[in-house]
Every structure is written in C-alpha cells, then in structure tokens.
Amino acid sequence: MNMLSLPARQWRIQKLLGTRAADAKLSVGPFQIVLGADMPCILLDDAHGATIGCLLGDPIDVVKQTYVTSGVRLPWPQGDITPTKFEAWISQLGGAFTALVSTSQWARIYPSAANSCVYEEGGSVAIAATPLALLGPRAYNERLDHELIDEMEIKLGGWLPAGLTAHHGVKRLLPNHFLDLSTGTVHRHWSGLAENCMDPQHGISQIAQLMQGALAAAHKRHELRVALTAGRDSRAVLAACCHLKNRVSAFTIDHDEVGPDLDLPKAMCRSLELEHKTLAQVLSTEPEQECWLMNSGHCVGGANLRLHRTLANFAPDSAVVTGAGGEAGRGFYWNTGDMPCAPLSAKRLLHRLDLKPAPQAVAAVQGWLTGLSGCSKLRILDLAYVELRMGCWSAPQTHGFPEICYHIAPLSHQRIFDILLSLPVDWRRSGCYASELITVMQPTLVAWPFNRYGWHRQIFYLGGKLMSHDRLRRKFRRHVLDRLSA
Image 1 (cartoon, rainbow, N blue to C red):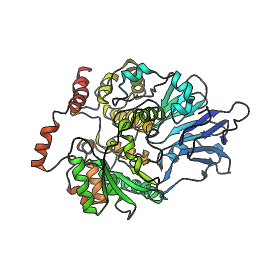
Image 2: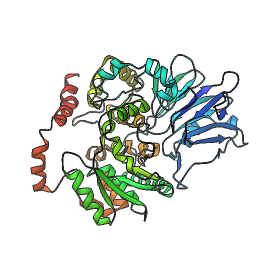
Image 3: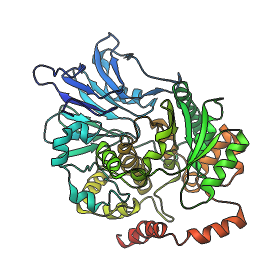
Image 4: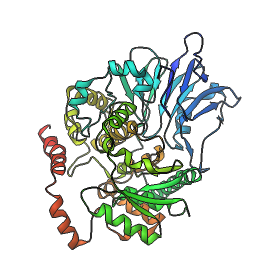
C-alpha cells in the first residue's frame, strides 16, 4: 500500500500542495480526500450549490429513516454557515461518520457522536480514519510505540485513552471535539445538556423514535443481526427492532461460562417468534490478529482481537446491531457514594476505566480533565464513557472487523447522549431508563430479569462466578485502587 492506496472503508484528508495527486478522486476547498474501496463520501453544498464539505462514513437521516447517500444541500449560503449552525445540523444525524467543513471563513473536522479519527501533530494538515491510513505501512511500523503498547496491556484488553495512539506524533480526535484545520488545534464543542433537566418520559419517547428511525434505515439496506445478551442495552435494541417484520434475527456468542447471557436470549426470541443462533467461538490466527491490530491502529485488543472471526460467516448484506452507547444512561463508571463535587484525579479515573496508569496515559487523562474544569464528577465520568471508552475503545476496533461485517449502534447518537446525560440522577443510578425504554417499544421483553436468572437458579450461578479471576481483578482496580489513588 502506498501513501494514497488505503485499506477498504478507510479515508485520508490532507492539505493540497500544488497539483492534486492522481489517486485523489475529489477535493473540498484546499483539502484533497483519498478514499479506500467502499468508503462512502457524501459532498455537502451550501444553499447556492458551492461545495463546502463532506461526510465520510454512513450518516443516517433518522427522521426520513434512510442513509444519506447523495449530495446534501444545506439551507444556508456559505457566508451564513456558522460553527453553531453546522454542529446543530450534524447532531441530528445518526450512524458513524466524520464531517469535513471548509468555508471561506473556517475549516474543521468533526467526528460523529461516538466516532473518532486520527491526525498528525506538528503543523502538517493530515487526518485519517486510522494510523495506517494516515502514515502508510512503512512509517506505521517505524513510529509504533511498542513500550506504550506493552505498558497499557493492549493485547490483553487495554486501550489508549484521551487522545493517545500507539504511534509517535499521532493523536486521536475524540468525540465531542473538533480539529481546527487553520491552526491544527483541538477544541471541545459539546459536553451535554444540564444535569437533571430532562423529563424522563418525554426523553424516553424521543430515544425510541431516534433508535427506530436509525434501524428502519439500516433494515432497508441490510439483514439485521442483533447481538443479544441478558443485559439492558442489547434488549432495548431488540425491542426497537420488533416493528420490523422480516430480515431480523438475533445471535449470542457462546463462551466458556454458561449463564443467563446464553439462556435468556433464546427464551426472549422464542416469545417473539424470532430466529436466534448461538455462534461457536472462532479464534483468529496469529496473522489475522496482527492484521486486525494494524487495521485498528494497535490501540485496542482483548476478546475482539481473538474472536473477531466469529462474525465472518454472516452474509455480506448483514449488519450486526449492538447496544453500544446505552451505558451512558446508567452511570457506567459511577461508584456507590460518588458525590458530584468530589475531586477526580487522572490516576483515579484510569482505575475506573480498568486501565494501567502508565505515565503517558496519566498525562493524557490529566490534559483531558483540565478541559472539563467546572463539570461535576458525575458528568466527567459520563463523558469518560462516551469519549474515552466509546471513542478510544469501540471506534478504533470497527476498522479491525472483517470487511463483510457491518456494524450499527442505534444508541450512539448525540441527541440520545444529550437525553441520557440529562435524566434525573436516581434514574441513572438505578438504570431504570432501559426498562422504561423497552416498555415503550416492546413491553413483553421486561418479563425477563436483567443479567440474572430467577432467584434460586441465580444463587447457584453466582457461586461459580464470584471467584472468577478476571472479575476479581476488575473489581480491585476499579474500587480498591480507585480509593487508594485519592
């Protein structure tokens, strides 16, 4: 692969220097855009038809229930397109995408709600979906930071938070931030609505509409395969799919620990007369793991590194539907007793994330925290989930999955995050928003408990689970080390 020949479904943006490269199929203002195979690029025009930007990826118009696939004409002339107007416009779109906007007055890159991309430090304007697309194979290997990869235990399940990448001189642009292409600087543009400002029932109704709009769009293009467990978020996704009459099924990946995650999905699907499959694990080979790591930037590993081939047997027009993003509604990183005004150090936050406090990670997280001065501890923990977990763990690995396996997460939408982060604290702590959401869309699905069996069977199940080494390690790092780092 040369610098302008990219992996499938990846992209690169760079400043035009003289004559446009022959491989670059299009340009926006002073920027050339290079696309890998099957990488969608939707041009954005102003009200007079002048091209002022593009959307790279799969944006969804949830109101019209369709993917945005052709050129879009914005309602304003170029001189009237302000950052505030543009940010409000892209916040209405679902799906995963990156927006480039370049007017006569300003130029920026925006990732969508839980998406991210990478850029090169040092003044040169170069942005890409992944480090491989940014650097090319040779520089990728030369600039790989093996020490950081080992320190952060990437292959064992760690990841790189707060803008870190595994390459010297390359940074990650996080969700809720933009890259100013005039100055090369990064700025936050969103931190959510005020806490406790949302009427819960009205908010739940809006979330249901947004999810169902995104899934209706995906259903027109794909066969939907719902990744179903015994948890709340995947069940909410299943409920949102129930109004779709065909080309919908569910699956659960088998694992060593038989439990409610295997048994309850089967029972729920039987009640809905919906096909459910239990997929046997398919372990990836060493070469496949290295390819996965390179495509995703050596930024994240763990179970998906080892098991990603499990999803490779779906038909090419399939879409795996996940509940990613739903944890934002239930205080995923909150601990019992967390107070809004309590301080939060970089080391304590890394322990909450179940990450090693390597010096580079501590410095990066401290810089991220500095940009949130004045926010409550609970809001910081919520943004850590969206930006440091979703943007740094979930988003990079989408490039590592087999190309035939398309993913969609209907809960990963900026408007949905707005609603979830502004629900009352008692709703957040109890996680009841998910039950209410499921009740609105498919009330029969609340009959089964979440993440557990009935009372007597649950006791026997927990007896074997409590002594799990991995479970004990996570609890120790999140709760005990968190307190010791105070």
